[in-house]
Structure formats: structure tokens, C-alpha cells
Length: 594
Image (cartoon, rainbow, N blue to C red; front, top):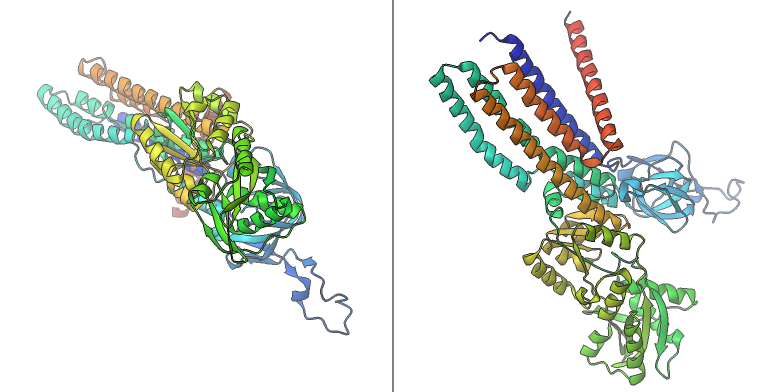
């Protein structure tokens, strides 16, 4: 047809639109890494001075052969892969932490933003844990390695992010099914129209304007951008399907300990039976809890240490349904939840029962200690210190029409007292729920309403998997990462509400994109058929403009106002840079050929 300008316009606009799409998705992928994918390959290995050289007895270089002062030089770099557990490394100000480990010397501040989204550097000192990939803002510090390379927590988070492989969401699958019907229909219909009317120009216009390019981009760009925004703010979501599900959530079930609270209980009071002392029962409880992962375990052990007490040496430690059993000098001892001990036949005196009732009424946690089938002491725990931001998180969820309930393994009285403190209806909050019970309850609720479950412990894994959206909060436990759809590594509960807000905003933009694509395509097709638009160039321009509009609108998921202007500015700069690079490559190729 010899319409070379139109042909050139088609090629140029389609290529530019394709480049813009790729650039948008690449920016999203890079942002999804959120600065995580920067694990250093080398570390400063600190060597003990006594191990560096063999000192002779008549030399003056070693006045004290037992001296353990660390010695490191700038050129003493070791590949991270060569590090072993227990190796000691030095990290200096401005450097990236190469290992997961414990600080054994020095103090400073660390930037945890890539991992938790916290904007302000956190102070660290001896005994604090640091994680690979984070920046030491102020130092230096000496760290004993507990994990390196692929074994670090950050490496596992990176792997979670990389699992996103642009698998189509339900919305995208529906669009693709529609286009699988639409494209052949348009091709055959336009061809029949052209041969019937002999108007081949209109036939070509119909082919161009009916192409569902913009429709196919309506969902992927917003989803990729939203996932990148989530990652940069301390949220790791498995894919666009999770965002679609989160946008429809009607009920949020929240674990209490560790999710809504700090998970660091304190002993409020120890009540002992006659014939026993507080120190003796504390020593025994500390001995039993030495190999326990229960939140109370560390509290009891630290309480014994603070009191200057040595833990009792117990044997045959066995985990029970809600506590631990062991032996002390041949005597059976048990420590755990009172109802579990009662089910095991433990006898409880009126004095001990009164103490249990007292703690339960006050909403405190309680654990019973027994020897030879008789309860001898009750430990009361305060652990309902709500995390900062919990109330705001609940209010934000309720603002979006989401009901909030607490689902916990703690005592019912404790759960109800905490619910009242947060302004929730105690009647709809459940306590004394075991892991299987949590999974069953979430499954039951999910049958009637779209449900989100958030928890932090091993015992929440089944419930996370049963929910429409499972959120693991602040947990590095492998079972939780596998069961959850979203990981929130930080400790800010408001991140949960931000996830829902982001999901709803993403859904809104996807719907707008679909509407834009359908309306513009319909107008172009009708105008071409009735003779209002017979220009291929005009059809191409309007069609590709809709593609540009949808791509840019999809990138606006990240925010409003100034953020949107920033997105456009950054995208424009990248396009200009890419064009310059393309021309530079072209000129270089021509120069080489000449």
C-alpha cells in the first residue's frame, strides 16, 4: 500500500511501547530486591594474635601468650564461602555486614531498612544480633559468625523474592482467555470485512486498533510495581495473586503473642506451696526450660540468672502438648499450662488453685510446676504489652471494612483482657487454641469469608496455610516462610494494614486500566467501522497512547501527588538515557564497520 510513514510509525511506536513496558517491569524487579541482593563476597577475618605466629620463649613479641586481642589488617579478606561457624569478622563503618552473627566487641548503629523497612538506623552493641546484607552506619564492630552465604536469613528472603516468576494472576488469566478468543475473531472478521467491502485500509486499521496490547498490560505492570513497593517497605509477597486475595479480605485473624505483643513476657509473681522456696522452684523451672523454645523459657532462665541462681540439672526432658516433663534425681517433674498438667493427673491444692484463678482473672499468663504428681508452684507472667502501632493497625483494617479477631494459644482470660485493651469485642476472640485447632478454625472461617491469618510462631504454620492470605510476622522459621503468602520481617504491625491498602489500591488501578483499554479499543473499532477513522497513523497513535497511559498508570501504584511526579520523572530520565545508549552503540557499530 506504500504507506511508508505509517509503517514506520507502527514499528517505532510498538518498539517504544515494548521498551517502556520492559523498563517498567525491570524497575519493579530491581526494586523488589529492595537492596537485599547485595550480600558481600568477602569478609575481614579476624585472627587471634596467638594463632598468627609462633612466638619463641626468648622473643619480646609475646609478653603474654594467653592474650586474645584480635588482629586484623586491611588486606586480610576472606571469601564468604570459606567462613565457618564461629569465625570472627570485623565490620567497619559504611560496610555491608557479610554474615549473620552476634557482636562480641564494639558498638554502633545499623541500617535495617532493607530487611524491615525501618527508616532510622538502630543502635547496636555487644550481645546484639546483626544480619548479612545490612549496612553498618557507624562502627566498627567485631562479630562472631552464626551463618554465612546461602545460610543467612537475608539469603532466604532473597530466594523468596526470586520465586516471583510473572505467573499470571486470576485477572491476567481471564484477560488472556478473552484475548485468545478476541484476536482470531478480529483477524478473521477484519479480513472478511476487507474482502467484502474491498476497503483494505479499514481492514488494516481494524487489525491495529483491535490489538489487545494495552489490555494485556492492565494487570502485570501494577502487580509488579506493587510487589516492588511492598518489598521496599519491608513486605515480601509471593506474587500478584496474593495482592488480589488481600484486596478482598473481609476477616483478619491475628495471633497474640509475638504478633500483637512483643512476645517477651516478664514474671509478675511466683506463688509457692508450703515447704518450698521461691529460689528452689525458680532453679528447677530454669533447668526444665533449658531446652525449650516456649516464650516463657527465656524469661525464666534470665530470671534465674539475674537472681544469681544455677539451674537444676534435670534429665529425660520431653515436650508435652502444652508443657515439658523431665526427671530430677529420679523424681518426675512437669512444667506447663495448668489444664495440661491436670489432664495428666497432677493434684492441685486449694492454695495453688487460688493462685491460678488470681492470674487468670487478671489476664496474666500462668504456668504450673509439679513434682511427683503434686503442684508446688505457679508462675505468673505479664506478656500483653501491645506492640507500638497495634491500635493504629486495627483501626486501619476496620476502616477498610475488615473484621478483626484474636486467635491465640494463650489462656482465654488473657486473650479477652488483651482484646478489651485494644478495643475489640472479647466475645469473638478465642484463646486456648492448639495448632490443629487454629488451622481448623481458620478453615471454617474461610468457607464463609475471605480470611487473613497473621502469626509468628511454628504453631501458626497450619493456620497460615489454611487462610486465603497467610502472613508470617517477624519470623525466620522455615516452616512459616513456606506456609505463608506474605512475610513481614520487621516488628511494625502497621505493615499488615499497609499491605491491605496497597492491595486495594492495586486492584483499583488494575480495574481502571481494564476500563481504559476496553473503552478506547471499542471507540476505535466503532469509529473505523462507521468511517470516522480511516487513518492508520491516527489509529496507531491513539492505540499506542492507551498503552503508554496504562503502563504509566500501573506505575502509579506506589503513591499519589509528589510520588507520581517522581515516578514520571525517573521513567523519563531512564528512557532518555536508554535512547542515548542505543545511539552510542549504533554509532560505535558504524565506526567499527567503516
